[in-house]
Length: 121
Image (tube, rainbow, N blue to C red):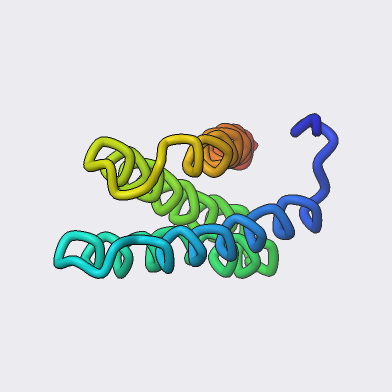
């Protein structure tokens, strides 16, 4: 899907789907101290971009919109780091993480462009 023609609704749906997938990743982590810690952290960072984006879409100013999008972007970047830690610690098979890591990359690129564009205007 081309991000240039992406509507706010499509992006919000992708962020919601991403949050659901992150929840499934968290549930699949081992019941160890490390697994539990990462599960808690990745659920927080991986589920917050969708509601922050939704709130940004209802922002009363361009500055507030850019701020909410930048929060979503920061949380996505944190989630990408947690996914890398999961992979490097061999907590889940790499093939299980490939698609969601790719989606995180795509969402970061989209939000990064959106934040940049909203701050230029």
